[in-house]
Length: 384
Image (cartoon, rainbow, N blue to C red; front, side):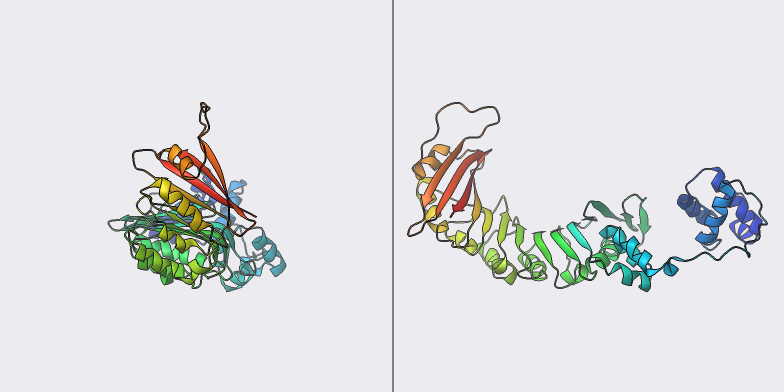
């Protein structure tokens, strides 16, 4: 294969010699074709012609002068009967179906008859990379000085002169904007890189569960507002950037938070005051960290506040004490319970259970308190 590419392309026999060389190397056909195009040029031979001669040589038929004019014309993918195309689309997973619909309008119409359903979509954006997972298939795009490199499942890196976010959105946005897309859990993490919902999502977007980490209250509110209120049942916020109660009030004023059933606030920096717990009063369940200066006085007040939450089914409160442990004796004493006496088994955590009858009601709250490292966790369940 020392001849120049232009000379090879002008000579049909030389092209077949190059193709035969690929067959003799026992390289799979797709990789052979890619190598063939790399050496002699993308326009040297179409894939269907390459496939014909590849398998002819593979099966030992070496006549270069075979006349193909008498052979039946091969059918293209578009000419496959619609019934068969429907069967093909039906057995593809949602990610495979997104590639199928990108081929042409006829196939796209067939693929769109099957609503794409994803159990989980996870996206992480930063100044140097963008990663996304569609169900269990992971994609990554890394920034380089002269563009980026995109990695797709089961393939080598694809070089591009575009920035990593533009290249990622070229692949990801068409997936998220497919008609009738269904998503159970959607996760979005944004590190120091401005991104707007219109760049990424259809508006409105319809996940049942949504996790978001952003750099500002406005960014979080923008993406929350792109979700369909009411359809979005569960919301998880990484509130590491939110230091002020005012930030949380802005978020909880969105229709998405008002109509959610469950909310979790994850933060090592933000703990809610007793009065701040009222922000969760409309929910069926919630998780958050609580700040207290006096467990003995504050825990009964927390119990009284939560007992007024009419919709509540369960919640989890975390009390952190930095390097020191919260004394379980203080939690037990605050609720009038005694700490069990006796050694714990290996790996066992001290747990205290407390029941509280809600005034003027047949319902009660069950408190289960346990130590977890330097935290005390209280799981509260309403028993009807």
